Figure 1: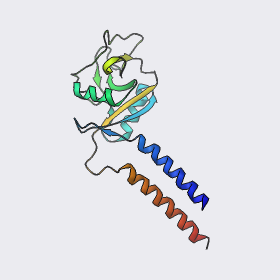
Figure 2 (figure 1 turned 90 degrees about the vertical axis):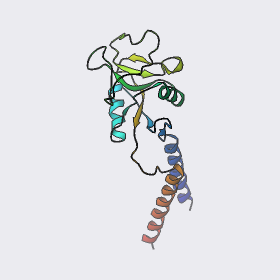
Figure 3 (figure 1 turned 30 degrees about the vertical axis):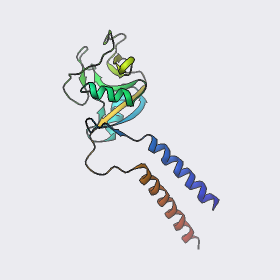
Figure 4 (figure 1 turned 90 degrees about the horizontal axis):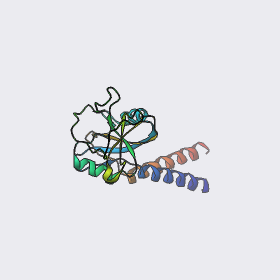
Length: 175
C-alpha cells in the first residue's frame, strides 16, 4: 500500500508541475501563448513551431497585445520579429505584415550583429534587438483548434485513474 501512495504522490507532483506551466489565452485576441526554452532564437522558433500547427514565436500586432504580453510574461523573452534575412528589414516569423513596434529608446541598433527581438528589455515591455545566439526563453503563440481544453484537474484525475488501473492489473496478474 505504501508503494501505491508513493506512486500516487509522484503522479500528483508531476501533474501539478505540468499544470503550472499550462498555456494561457489572451482574451483580447483568443490566441494561446506558452514559454519555450530557454534557447537561442532559432531553437526557440523551432520549439514554438512544434507546439501546434501554425505556432511561431509571438507576433505582437498592437499595443493591447504588447501590454498583455508584458503583464503575463516577466523577464526577457524572444518574440518572432527578426531581420535575419535582410539586415534592417524586420519581419514576423508568422508571416504577418509588420506594423506595430515597441522598441526601447535607441533600438534597434544592431550592436554586435543583433537579428532577433527580445520583449521586456526595459520598462513597459519595450523591445531590443539582440544576438540570436543568446539563450533565453521565448514566447510561443498559436490559435487553438476549436474544442475543449482539458482542465488541470482533469489531467490529475486521468493520472490517478491510469495509476490505479496499472495497480489493479498488476494485482490481478500476481493472483
